[in-house]
Length: 455
Ligand code: AMP
View 1 (spheres, rainbow, N blue to C red):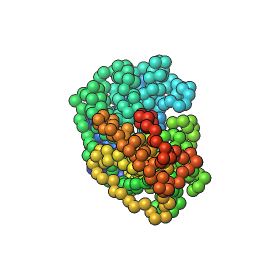
View 2 (cartoon, protein in one colour):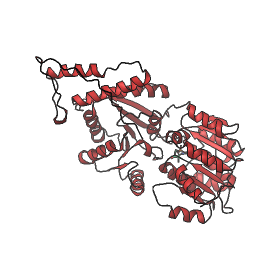
View 3 (cartoon, rainbow, N blue to C red):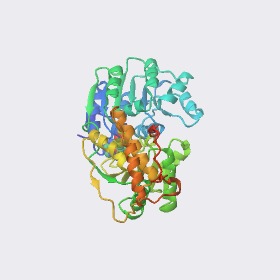
View 4 (spheres, helix red, strand yellow):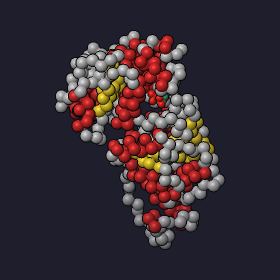
């Protein structure tokens, strides 16, 4: 089936052709007729499947041309990157219409957004926070909204937007069409759909949470941080297939460190995006990455959803995300729109715990690769080894409160090993080995420190 058979109008068909789409993707084929027929929809689809066009095209088809002053459709996304991305796509499809599309997101001033709203608006695309702020300032009224989209509903819930969503649903007219898209169908999302949707039709394009088949996944088990750095350096410098890569890192601090390392040691065609970077620097970094003037983008998870760049050859997970759905989102940045891609994950012994959980969710094992022989393997320092043991204990105890914990055992083992001289203490990690002839002081019971929660 082609786009013409989906009963879209000429303006849209021309824009679709210009975008280079020759045939609809699976989600578009399944969702567009249902949305045009007025049904509420639950679309279980990851980014990369063409879901934006799947809801944007029928919305544009329905509202056709500029009319009145107030919005008739609102689209919500969890992050400003995603909202900007949706804005680009919707404006591209609406190119041959006079529809007024306004994007509202935080991180930038409200002045310009207000000016756009004051000129009249047909479609608002927004993050929940900024949308509510401007609504409460009475910058727009919602009485004419007929369609509401929640895109990446799972992420919105992960990010704690539930209270805002509830408030929004109170103020948007009840008689409306609801379209909810989510990469995964967790229990929470299921509850959300029960609360907000009316007799929805569920459209699932890939079995739940199965990574796109165009992505080949690889797992390297790496003993420690330093070895991860060596492996990263190897991939960037030596692996010629790495032409455009996104490196995902859990925390902003590690992202900064890794970014600095890459620029110092490998290539300065590298940029970084995370929540502490101001909006302009994030936009510039994305633009440079898109047009190919930089090869490497270092990113944290919050920034990951809106990244839509074709021909990303590699996603490198420098660490394993502990919000497991993020794994699917991270690797979905490659293998987009029929291009193939490689997703490589580095995991320490402690992180393998999370890998097993992720494998359950994606319902497939991630193939393990041998470390390339050129990669230098650094020995694990005392403190890092303790940190891994502590982290593992933390997760195991969370699962099973009766679990005693191997941390103290490990600590003792390590101390004995260190005595037998395999351990080369670094400056910061000198272990205190008690003298054998002294009576051993009783070890104070120590609370395992919880690893930092992801934001
Ligand atoms: P999305 O899942 O909406 O984030 O879209 C992922 C990528 O696929 C974007 O770069 C779209 O421009 C592209 N895309 C969407 N629909 C099609 C299509 N029918 N043919 C080719 N590319 C598409």
